[in-house]
Image (cartoon, rainbow, N blue to C red; front, side, top):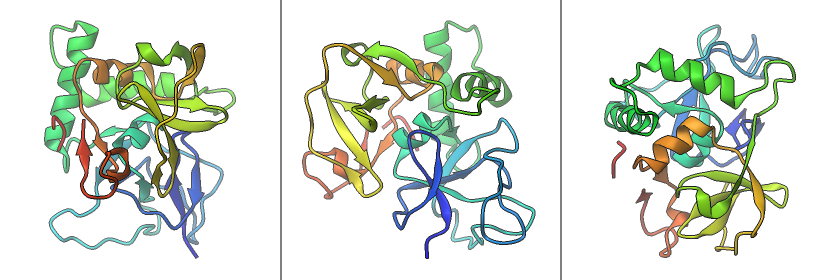
Length: 219
């Protein structure tokens, strides 16, 4: 039976057999057993990491340490409020921070703690603990952004929308002319607009599963 550690673009953590391209964490979210408690984060540091780091084998839910979370790809992780890990995905982290700086007009590249503070305020409502969304037209959004389309998540890509699922993306659909609810936090959308290219699942490419698409600024 799969563990409850797969993350949707809505930031929800559910059980599913799909593993995806990236993992990450928000601190230790499980108790003595391999099940989650009520908390969905333990700190403002929400990161996405590589699946394999120098061949090190780790348990997904070691007692009292951290809870491994898994994402279909980086667009999913960004939508859920995560950012690239500064350790195992150093290149992606620096590219993300540099794009953040460019879009924000900052004099210096922001530190991880500074980005985490901004992201946390925009990814979750502190009172309801629900994901914060914001309205936009699809044509105003950069590739790699996630939106809610007819009650389900979809990826903005090449002028269209690609419906999201744990197994990958569906065929392109025509975006609506009106407003949609954007799932990706504004700061991450800004980084995408400034040139950050997230790692996308192979099903986002016209060739399907013949290769991973990188939209190759990241790691």
